Length: 65
Image 1 (cartoon, helix red, strand yellow):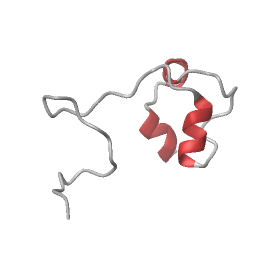
Image 2 (image 1 turned 90 degrees about the horizontal axis):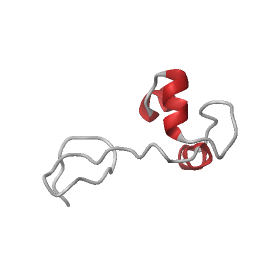
Image 3 (image 1 turned 60 degrees about the vertical axis):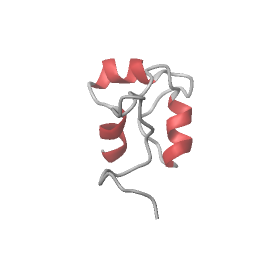
Image 4 (image 1 turned 120 degrees about the vertical axis):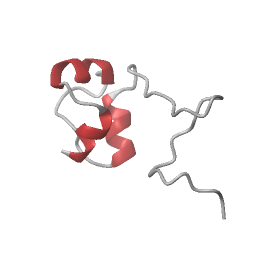
C-alpha cells in the first residue's frame, strides 16, 4: 500500500512537494464530466477562471454546493 499524506483526492504535486494549482482555463464541461453532476448553469466551453470571477468560488466549493 502506498504512503498516504492524509489528504483526500489524488491531486499531483510540484517538484517541491506543494499541490499543483488548478488551471483557470479548464472548461466547465470537463468539470461536469469529472464529477458527473451539474456544477453551475452555463455553456460548456466557459473557463473555470470566468466562473471563479462570477461566483467568487473555487472548483472545490462549486462541487460541494
